Image (cartoon, rainbow, N blue to C red):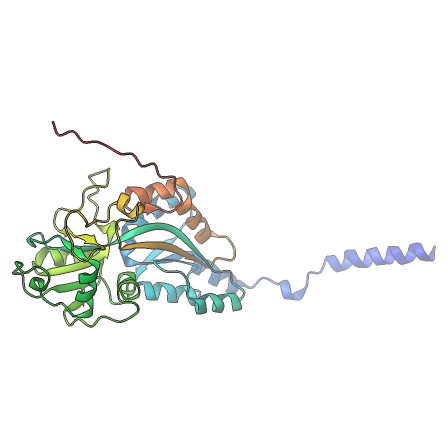
Length: 319
């Protein structure tokens, strides 16, 4: 009887305790509000505006979820992620070792998810008679070793090479510093920034001596569903890995040349995700990885990361 009573009282005590959750598990309204606010936006380098906007259009119509893009330079996009002002940023780089360690120390689980590849495009004015350039000469321009067109092409009379980027803190600038100059900063006195990728295109269109650098998703003529036609108002230069650039050894940032590695200025686009709750930021990232999201990337002239690619040889008969 006493044993039965002990068991009875133990079970009763357990049931009573179960009615009172621990004080440490109380909901925190401020923390919840902060999470929801950060989950309602994503940040992205401005150069990804066309592709991210298109992805969001289909995602929000399909899921009815709401997420607002903030297009800024890559450096500030990552800063907002590190400050927990957003849980998702689109960049052309992985987390640094320190960034990853800092987030893990705060009990987060940062993930860098490759979603696509694009090409860094070099564009010139349509009046420029030269349309091919070597990686070596491009680097020499950024270093300030070459400042005039005739130092590369003796017959070119356009004078000083007016180099223009989108933004001093953009993914385009950082990629050139890291991948072209080995981490060294630009030294050319004739390098400027036009604030946005669209402004770079406008500037190059109106300045014969200019040379612009932008992401390739800004180039495609959307009237051409085959993605083999670039915008008519500027010229996209072919880029060669060899010491002398010709039309036969230089490549433009078409999808196939990104795919087979011929185009040398290929970048990886990452979704930097720090969403511990698998909320809307995680859902959108997953959507971009799905066949529908990858098809949108393909349609914008970039190379999908996860989609199956079918390559066919086509013989064109001009008769």
